[in-house]
Image (cartoon, rainbow, N blue to C red; front, side, top):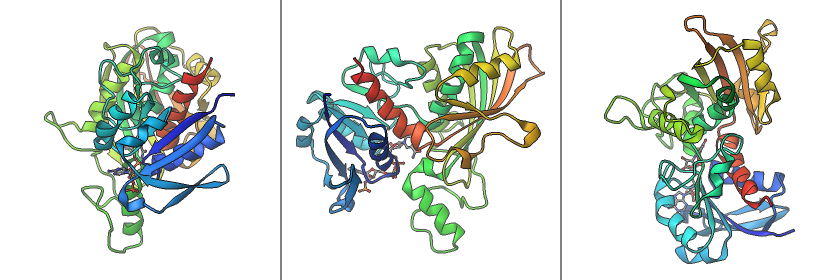
Amino acid sequence: MKLYDVAVVGATGLVGRKIIQVLEERNFPVGSLRLYASEKSLGKEIFFQNRLVKVELLSPKDFHAHEFVFFAAGAKVSKEFAPIAAKAGAIVIDNSSAFRMEKNIPLVVPEVNPLALLHHNNIIANPNCSTIQMVVALKPLHDKYKIKRIVITTFQSVAGAGQKGIDQLDDELQSIPVRYKKFPHRIAHNILPQVDDFVFDGYTKEEHKMVNETKKIMGDAMIQVSVTCTRVPVYLGHSESVNVEFKKKIDVDEARNILRKEKGIIVVDEPEGNYYPIALMCHDKDEVFVGRIRKDETVKSGLNMWIVADNVRKGAATNAVQIAEELIKV
Ligand SMILES: NC(=O)c1ccc[n+]([C@@H]2O[C@H](COP(=O)([O-])OP(=O)(O)OC[C@H]3O[C@@H](n4cnc5c(N)ncnc54)[C@H](OP(=O)(O)O)[C@@H]3O)[C@@H](O)[C@H]2O)c1
């Protein structure tokens, strides 16, 4: 079996650490593993396959040695270093928003649009975490009933803002001085109707990402998408209330069965037993959890549903490793 020389940029962060864990768990054929982060992490070591790997400082010259480079250090680092790695021949899988909407860069969720991987110029973008879990759940329904419009409200965990988001919630819950102010307000015991910065039209960048990325991944620019993103004091796992209107007539039981058959989806939908997806259920799971599936009686053909997933795992690390797995399939 061929082994690949792999690197993780942002190896000490939430997503980077999870990529290292997922590479090991899924037995990705790693020959050598190099780990990069900022100066702050120099001297750190991270376990991979029963050995300690040193964290190194990122430098452009390193990229000549790699076949796959996972970027998880933010858009600024990706914009500077990903083109260097790609030019040196590595396949870059980028978790940031840097390249997602670029025309010649595939934006891929393997369960949804794996064929987009057929054409790339060595950079592949991993979508936004909130978008990934939603399109995994909606694609099988789109194939059958054709989606006309989606209205979404997200309930996003603090892990979505990286380690410092977790630290802010931790500090506020312990009533100690906050080390990092990652959110514009207190997040403990609160809900913020803001994820990322606001833009010209009163929406946030996160909301725009969900609109644009959904259309690109689903390959259908006609789908209408309306989004409100919120940040909630939950450590891990994004939840989403999703209302979908279809062009064709839906049947709720049939829709539920379609989702049940999909690899990568777990339907948890037994309201009589108070059994539905919750954030705590999805921790360290690769699947997307779907429940509260019910007819929207206000339109001719519509559904309401509740979609939950581990945003660091399927929303980032697992999806990135799955992309690499697709690329090495013979
Ligand atoms: N968290 C999520 O749920 C999620 C989901 C999807 C996508 N993403 C994306 O994934 C990326 C990483 O997010 P995260 O949540 O893992 O953030 P994080 O916990 O804050 O980790 C950031 C990582 O980037 C490294 N880094 C920062 N500046 C650097 C520099 N100049 N050179 C090299 N490394 C640098 C940090 O290293 P040090 O520790 O040395 O500072 C750390 O390893 C972001 O683009 C984010 O948008 C995150």
